[in-house]
Every structure is written in structure tokens, then in C-alpha cells.
Image (cartoon, rainbow, N blue to C red; front, side):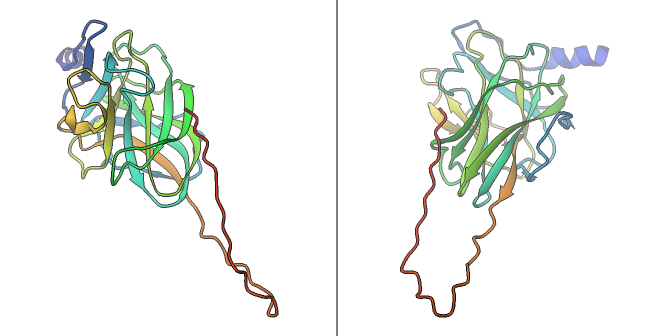
Amino acid sequence: MSGRFATLLALMVLLIPAGAAAQTQIGHGDSASLRDDPTSNCAIGSLCRNDDGSAENGYSWDFAGTQEPYYGAFAESYDLGPGTVSCGAYWFTQIGYFYGRPMDAYVWEGGVTGEPGAVLCMLPQVVPTNVPFWPDCGKNDFSLDCDVTGEFTVGYWADFSDHAQEWFICADENGPGGHPWTCIAPGIGYPSGWQPVTVVFEECRSLLIGAHFIPREPSGVEELPIDAPPAISSAWGRVKTLFR
């Protein structure tokens, strides 16, 4: 136990009074152990991620750093072509403040060639349950069933506006790099809106936020009878529901 207490005492965590902006991090360390989600039902789709399978830090916002609708969100972007994000995968860690506060899981459009855009899907008020103590990171899968046509961003927002953060999103600081984003609240000393995570946490290469992804099969071409006239044109559309 002495090693655990020594680790906790060494954590570089800012605890700022309510009403102040707080960007917090655990502090760069050796690679954390990654734990799988024992309750996951995300058996469909391939797990895609931008990290190198390791985590060296953890980040969070709290107090004035988290504001509605999703200021204080963290996210990671992908471009996997048309398909379905069946689940979002989130690796979290804690240092002792976890009491089961819920979060909202999101998919936004875009995020690779530009900042994230409109909300495509949102799953509200889900509670991560696999949140071990640092230096362990626990995977939490949440079903999203979200259709995408190209670039997309998967992430989350939790309301820590009235107390210190309950968990940190695990971060890769020595991998090949991905597309990590955070949505910064206005008036707290940083550029507001969607910004690369490195604006706040300079060593970040990617966040441990992945997507269970199912590629869309190419549409088949239906054979026409020999004497049937060719179709003049065809068109289709689909409606995306904005949840929030």
C-alpha cells in the first residue's frame, strides 16, 4: 500500500475552489495498465483507436471548465468511411473521487480535416463503472448505434461544475498521434470552443477514446431484365436525428 500512497502523493492534480476554471492532469508517468470492460456488450464491429495501446497521463476539466451544453468535453476523431459506430470506448482512471456521476456519450460529425461539427448521436446519463485507480485505466463501452458517412468524432461530456473531477480520460503521450479534441468553455483563459487537446495539455498525442465500427457494405447493383428500359435517375436521402 505504501507504493500506492506514494503514487497518489506524486500526482500533479490542481484542486481549485468552485467557480474557478480547473484543467487537471495526473502527471506524466510510465505506461498504465489497461483493463478491458468486463460488462461490455459491444461484440459487433472492429475496435478502432488512435493510441498505441499505452497511457502515460490522464486529463480532466472541472468547476468552471465544464459548462452546458458540452464545454469540457473530450473526444477523438476518425475517418473510416461510411458505416455505423456501434459503441464508443472510453478508458478512464481515478485518484479517489469517483462516486458514480453520469456522463453523456456523443458522436459529432467531422473532426479530422477540421473541428468537430454537428451532433450526430448522443446517449445521455450513462455511468462508467470500470474506473480503476491510476496507474490503471479501465475501458467503458457504451452503445451508440450511430450511422456516419465519413469523418466522425466520438467523445463524452460530464458535469463537474460543482466539485472536483471524479475521473480522468487516459491519454497517450508517446504514440504516433491521432486527432484529440477538447471543447473549452469561454472566459477561462484559453481559446473557447473545440480546440486540439495540446492547447491545454501539451504532451498529448491521442486520447484513449475508441470506436467499435461496422463498415457499410457497398450497395449492390440489381440486374435489370434484358428488355427493360434503363432507369432515368435514382436518388435517396436519409435523416439524421439531432439528439441534443
